[in-house]
Structures are given as structure tokens and as C-alpha cells.
Length: 290
Image 1 (spheres, one colour):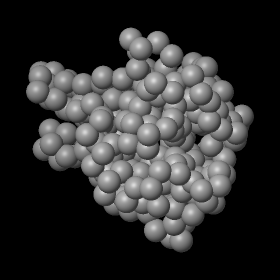
Image 2 (tube, rainbow, N blue to C red):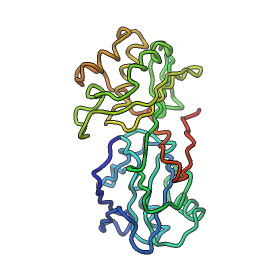
Image 3 (cartoon, rainbow, N blue to C red):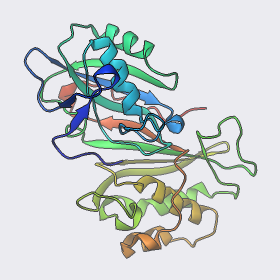
């Protein structure tokens, strides 16, 4: 869920895949375009572009489709990279192109060239100072748990699963210790390369809808595996494997080895990215509904 350094070299897909494009300020004659992307991550090895065609990233598919419509190589920047198997209802990207296309032409043309499990939801021309990653003020994730004794079949890959009954009210209470700015060392992947473990959680809640338990969290930014590690801790408390207060104990330990199991990526969705009002981007948050 972390991003690349400030100056990111983005290689376009398709026939022009050997050319690198550094996305910073639009070149003369180019327009900056923002788009909201929805995807089922089960078919991909994360968002990030992959060199091996047998392990595609969502970025590969998006860049290839945009490049076809633009008729030139296009590189894209996203609001936050998602891991292998993670989904999105509201990923935000930007790209630059000198091609003269209306938003509807971008939308229909790109979607016609995307695989079935990836779609652009909206396309919006932007000012040159917009940056999908660095202009973002916060990100929102939902983690969806199927809480039934038998593992789901129809929604396999789209839900996490816990066969033991979960006390969602206890999980909600437990999660409130995460609010505010903290050192989330215990909740990030051992290999996370973020420069600082400090993040600010703006809101977190746990609710139940029939057999589905939903963890919803908003923060200024996230560390690698941060939401999945939080979900793993809350599920352990919710099913009684760990005592109440364990989420606080893990947080205060600042030690990943104390944090328990990382929850599967299946139930994780990027559902929203917040930007300053002046950019006028669509801000509807679409948690997964079934």
C-alpha cells in the first residue's frame, strides 16, 4: 500500500513498452487527466507494473488500454499501490496526454480495451498541479469478512473468512485505540520500506451486516499490510482467541513479531481517496456490496 519515490519513472504498456516516461509536470501541449479505477485484484499480482507477462499488475492493463486510446505510450501514477489479491472500488490515478479526447471518449475507449475485471469509473481533466499520490489527504479501506461456519463459494476471493463467531461490537471498541497518530511498527510488514512507521488514523469502525463483518478505516496514509495486520488482530480478539486490550498491547509493543497473523488479502478493498475540494474529484466511497 505504499508508493514509489517522488520522481517516479513509469513505463508505458503495449508496443511502446520500452520507453520510460517520468510523470511530474505535463509536457507542453499535454493535459493531466485523473480517473477513478475499479478492479478485482484476484487476477493480478498487485497494482504495480510487472515485467513478467505471467504475473501482471493492474497497472500493466491500465497503461496498455490508455496507450491504445491515446495512440502513444502513457504512464500512470496511482494514489496508493495495492498488494497481490487486493481489490479497489475507488483507486485514483493520473496520466498526461497530448491526445485530444473528451472525458467520455477516454472512458469508453479505455474500458473497451481493459480486461473484464478492471474498469474506469470516471475521467476528469485536471490542473497541472494535481498528483494522484501527493495531492491525496487520506485513503479509505474496507475489509470484508464472511463470518459463517462454511467457507463461501460464490464470493471466494472477494471475502475474507472466519468460521468462529465474531463479536463485532468488541472489535469496534478494540479498534478505537488506533485513532490518532501512532508508531504502527507492529502493524506493518517486516519488509515495509516506508521511511517512518508513523501514521494518523482518522476513523475506524467495525459493523455487521447479516453474516458479513466490515472493518472500515481511514488514515492519512497506510504502511504495507497495515490494514490486513489490523484486521488479523481485531479478528483474533473478536473470536476470543486473544483477550480484550490486545490491540493496544500490540500497538504499544511496536514490534511486528507481537502482532499475530496477517489477514488474507481477499477481503481488502481500497474504497476512497480524499483530495482538496479545489480539484473537484468524485468523492463517493463505495464499500463492496453483495
